[in-house]
Amino acid sequence: DIQMTQSPSSLSASVGDRITITCRASQSISYLNWYQQKPGKAPKLLIYAASSLQSGVPSRFSGGGSGTDFTLTITSLQPEDFATYYCQQSYTTPFTFGPGTKLDIK
Amino acid sequence: QVQLVQSGGGVVQPGRSLRLSCAASGFTFSTYGMHWVRQAPGKGLEWVAFTSYDGSNKYYADSLKGRFTISRDNSKNTLYLQMNSLRAEDTAVYYCAKDQEPYDILSHYFANWGQGTLVTVSS
Image (cartoon, rainbow over the protein chains, first blue to last red):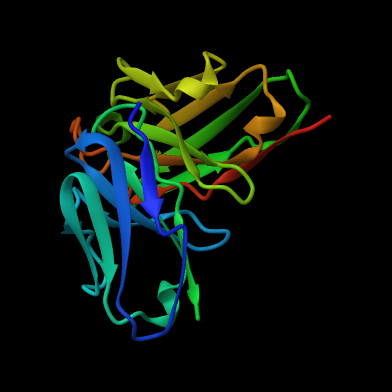
């Protein structure tokens, strides 16, 4: 199975900050996706195929990377961005998620 | 618009069974692969199972060890998860989710999710 790790596991930032979350796969993958989840809600797809922005998602979200190392960057954090972020590989089953990165307000 | 409406959660004793349902509307259900994802209280997301659009291919998380079965009834636009021999560690919110593209073996990412249903395994 492909194992996914994320760093950091938690992050404190301020409105207006730029932040980057890293996701690493235990082997090279072609498909990496990012989700945002707020308490009590289903996850929301932000980025698919590493760098494609899902329709309706603000352009301050961007994804990058390839192979085993991927990033999610949020420029100019907004109050509604404070949430938990998960990466997910959809390259092969089982379609594993990373452990999550909790982003909270400093 | 796409709607995935879940039902069937609740409290169940260890060792018993439960079946979850996910009723789909707003898209051609029979052309999309479907998934179950779960989230234990205070924990991260765990992918559970996948069925192809026609039910011919099914895959599961290794941790389930044959206890769960995913199925679909395309005539009823409904996805199911049959859960047997339930354990305390199966306690979670279960979500159904659809593939992004029809017939596409590479679009296993989820823009559409059900509302989630809580399964609590406790005596």
